[in-house]
Image (tube, protein in one colour):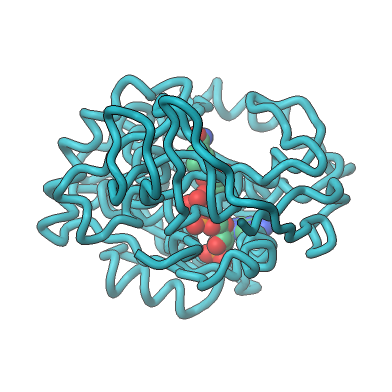
Length: 338
Ligand code: NDP
């Protein structure tokens, strides 16, 4: 059993030395337990927060403990009446080959999911759910409105853009690099996509939003948000989903404090800005999401590119790359064979 543990807490961007690959015996399931073998492992930005000891809505990973992660696994052996060897399950087995479960924290994949089991970690899983709920519930898209989302080729952003388009919005993506922008427009159907690395990024964004911004789905913060602020319309909505540009910071930067300006803007333009944590705010609405998203995915109306890495041992570098924008699509690690 190979497992990747947190060896030390990062200062700034994580480095390979923060992780350690260990081997141990394959655990033996007890009464009413199942042994799971990981097939796919999801790498997600929130894991950076769990590597730090700082207070958050989720408790940190302990030093020398296995890194946590959503996984798609197969049941290897079962002493549990509800599970049989070979079953595909969605769970939270972490960065390792094998894990035990008492059945309470795993869910069988439905039969129609078995052709693409890793989608349970992406378009039909936590990131897809996040994009859909944040957009529909807080963003409240209306036909003809302009929506902007960054990390547009990624897991959450790709769903936000495609669903907003299905709802009749003009969709403007922001992504890091020309390839990601081309993909966002040609494959995901964004009306425009701006490269955040271009020197005149803010001017390009303004040109792509001639009627201003009605919904800014916040995935990144930082310089992207600076460019968005002057374009916000009266009664704009900002689902505040993530701030990945800040995740490697030890402290928020000194300098020009834009908070009073932002507060005045929110007041004057009656902007609704609301943070959300997908599991805490919307966990009970997962069935509603699947009823909407399942048919869209099956009809090819919503897709999600996977950036698939082979081998558990490559998870640390792939995760470090995720925080630097090196992933192109939903980052998934293939840990074992089907
Ligand atoms: P992605 O698949 O989009 O991968 C992360 C992407 O973030 C990178 O590819 C890169 O895209 C972009 N990025 C990285 N660094 C920066 C930076 N400094 N400035 C701007 N963009 C950057 O990840 P997810 O779709 O899984 O997550 C997107 C956001 O949603 C994250 O902030 C995450 O924390 C948040 N989230 C929040 C949840 C909630 O419950 N609130 C649940 C799930 C996710 P590019 O190169 O194109 O810029």
